[in-house]
Amino acid sequence: SVTVASARAAAGPGIRAAARGAVAQAAQAAREEAALMRAWGVDPGELERMPFDQRARLAERLRTSRLARWAELIGRFRQMAEGERAHKIENATGELVGVTLGDDLSRVIPSELANLGLPETRAVFAARYAAGELMLYDSQGEQATGRGAVIACVDTSHSMYEAGPGGVTREAWAKACALALLDQARHAGRDFVGILFSAADKIQIFRFPGGRPTGIAQVLDFAESFLGGGTSYQAPLTAARELLAEEFDDAARRRGDIVMLTDDECGVTEEWMRDWKDAKRLLGFRVFGVAIGAPAAAEADSVLDALCDNLRSVEDFTDVHAAADLFRLI
Image (tube, rainbow, N blue to C red; front, side):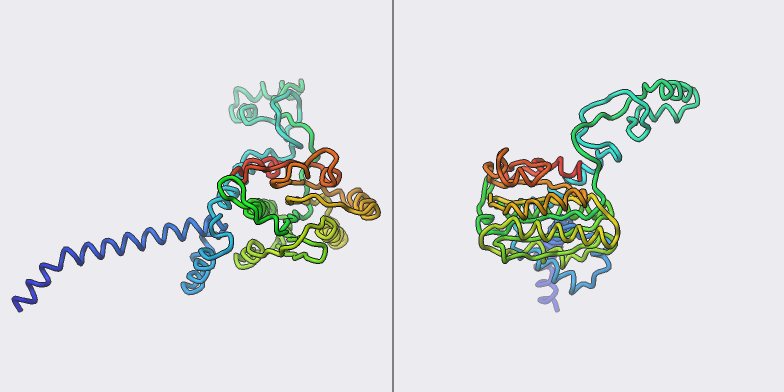
């Protein structure tokens, strides 16, 4: 007994140290798992309701996903989009460029509205309103925010594997942007559709209705899929046009938004372009283009320029703010 007691006393500090180490490792693993879940947009409430074995399988899938190494980029895109939404002024069209004077109550700046909260300044507010001298947010250049579906057409041709600054691939930037657009659509109660495309015969469509919960498994299926091959504009844009026409026929919704994310330039037929312009006039949708690592595709005389209302080129794939205006306008 004396020998056993002595052995226990000698081993005690080591056991306690090992226990503390195990607790620290478990806490670190829990923090990493929570950060990974946040980056992929898993709602904390959804996570709490999830059975342990399902949660463990999800965590393992997130760790081993094709885009697992870009979880931090995906998280930064989501945070940027959330910040842009927080500064978005409802009913103010286009990009905010300053402050002007007028009587449009939908664009009154917060400091002006504060005058309504004090009895002694309400008369001042009323007088300024009557004179059209309230301070308003000023904007320029874009039509009103859409209300139809948000459709992200993501190029998954072989060249999208190419990496840029920081080792971030074109695919990773495009998918991270598309996932943030999914959040944007959900926040506004709008349908979201992800269309993966490459060659004319390769297309995959993922639908996320605005009125239903979005399961993380479907989000991962969209993010992880890659088709390979060449690039065709007509196939994904025809599918997007047909989806918006279907939405118009079923729910009388117009003014959808299509975002084309590609790293290549390709042609379209004249007949297809005529049909495209007719549908655009009828359905009132907007087209935003992002040329990823392909500045020539965003030049003034490019096919992409002819298709898009709003076009930009992205070459630094570590920069999430290159797409910031998308989340102000969509």
